[in-house]
Length: 82
Image (cartoon, rainbow, N blue to C red):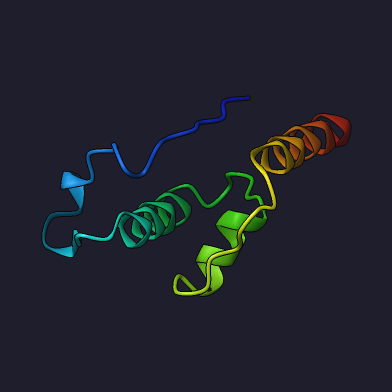
């Protein structure tokens, strides 16, 4: 299973073209929405699901560790279901 991590402040969002804004959080939300649209079978964590539902109200993890723990749990659940 692949998982990715990126720093929105340093990420090159130029693929967004005219949709690109000066706000890295907004650009990140657009990136996640595109990933969800073009990868409908990809697993989503609470953060991604939050952006799918409402890109203006992003779910915030209490810590980076909480985010990583959720990702590990999702991957474990997916492996268990095989």
